[in-house]
Length: 369
Image (cartoon, rainbow, N blue to C red):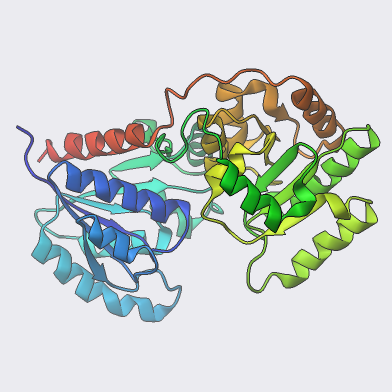
């Protein structure tokens, strides 16, 4: 019988974001397997869920980029000495540095694990994420990036992609009539033509300009579509939103584009979308929205670079387009709107796959003593 482990995960805060969501997902799996799960962070809107799912939380501000953060080093060291965890798992750079320093000289020393969630700027500050006894990377793209920029034994790297829960994004899911009536009443301009959805926060990184240019390119080809920029409305991003509205007007497609704040009904939006777009203009480490849409059997059109390109190459090659090539983007969109290749159910990139792989890594390290 496997012995009960104590695992401490460190993140700056528990708000929205890939690292934070993965922290909760792994914490949930640890509790379900009978282990002790502890998370150290400043807290945030996901804290109540974390505790409701059986994990413990210790409030420490380890993510503030200030010399004052060092005052938490002593309390962190005393806390870890008291808890005596088997695994200390850092998911962000400053918490990783704090954990690294706190563990120095500690006997017995817990196993130190890091996860590289993003393509951080290379340098000394980021190098801590390559110093784990085991380094989890969320894609082959990230693995290649780490090996290119840091002197690290490839044997210490383990690719564990993030995963989606098929219960949250069921294969072949259809939005019910009542939801559709509410949705199209809220966005009447989206009715009457195939819907393209680009999920992503209000930043240039996500490629909103290219999505609007895509609508214009399709219009020039006689293909009528609608576009929802899902999640683009955010506090403090009003000037960016106005810039997008002006671009849509200048390109003659203002009436075909809608804008929304982040929504809880993403699954339903995907279900009524003819295409889900992923047009980030810089390579991303993974591409959760790609997996979410494909899990539901929704076609995805995206730029073939970074983690997104990696996912599309494996899961939906027809949806790949060279980055920034608006002409090819419009051509491929028109092709997919005519006939989209079928999508089989996911057999990888499931939440359970990620959880089991992470717990197996913990168990392997703990077995070393």
